[in-house]
Length: 149
Image (tube, rainbow, N blue to C red; front, side, top):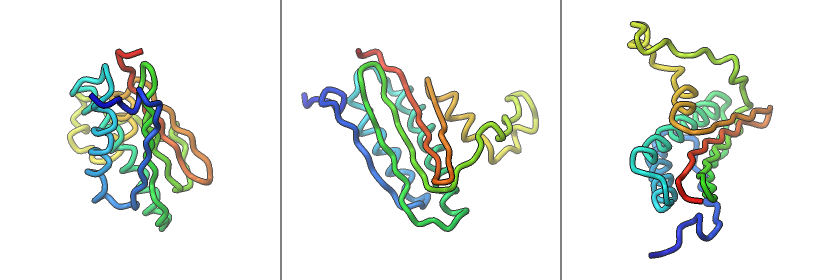
């Protein structure tokens, strides 16, 4: 069996044009890099794919909102006990603390909530997350812990 990216100590990165038609490619990238990591089962991988899709969707929207054609960067960093995905955009940044929480699942308004779920999904579908913003853009870091060490 070939060594995984973790075994080799590799970080793997792709850059995509800021267009939604590349989201499937991003999900495939995450699957290919993470699937070989010990301790990441199919459900955990799917959670990470959804969280990364949300982060990349937000990055694409940030680029579109400012007319930015620069690529969105997605970097996967496997290491002992964890896999970290970083999503970098050049969209000008935002204050994540100002994003309201979505309605509770039992709240009927939740049925009509089409936007504003991305940060919440990233938070619940990863073990750790961090968002760093500046005028130059945003970096989202999503981490899942693995059973490997």
